Structures are given as C-alpha cells and as structure tokens.
Length: 149
Image (cartoon, rainbow, N blue to C red; front, side, top):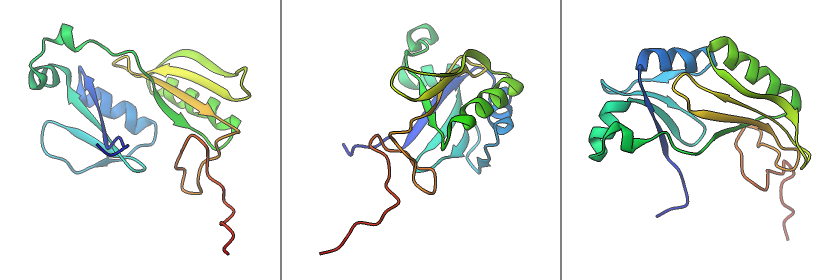
C-alpha cells in the first residue's frame, strides 16, 4: 500500500446540509455520481456520503459505524488565518470546541465540529511551512531550491 490517503469519506445525516456547510467555508464541489458529494482538495478528495448507506456498504449497523476518534487537520500559512477559519466555520454552523489559541510547542490551533460532529483542527505550525500552493508535510517545505553539485 502506498503511503497516501486519497479520499476521506464523511458519514453525514443530511448531505445537503453538510454540503452547504463546506460550501460556506469556501469549498467547491466537483461533478460526481448521484448519492455522493465530492470536494477535490490538494492531493486528495473529501466525500460526503449518507451515514446509513456507508454503514450498509460496510455491512455494519449505524451504531457499529460509530463516530471515530480522530481529527481532520487544516494547516494555515499564518497565525491569523486560524482564527479566521474558526470564525468562518462558526458562521457556517460549526460548534466551536476550542477557539484559536497558542500551544506549548509554539504553534497556534483551534478546533471545531461540523454539523455531523466531525472534528477539525485548524493549525499554524511555524516549524512546518506550507508549500507555495498550500500543501502540507510534517517537516515542512523549503522554498529554497536545492543546490546542485
């Protein structure tokens, strides 16, 4: 298996409500088949799929599907962007779990839950600068090209 996540599928109770939330954050849908709503991201896609259908596809009850103990992360280019995104999420209907704040390791983070309870961490990590197109990797991107020879 390649070291990659290609698609994140969120189980949602109401696709239209969930799509409206992400669109209010500024995301744009792509064409997809009936029954699924998809947003292409930087290097992967996020899909919104009816909770009951996802459970059925896996052969589970909705109770067995659970809610998952994880966060979806969105890293920002600067500290101020964390609070901006948290406020935009709140205006779109998110529940703010923790407002933007400094953390012990030198970063700045905040948390919100979307209308279906999926938890997002919005973070500025000064030790992991994003690429010019906004891509993230743990050790960051250096905008200085490597020296040859």
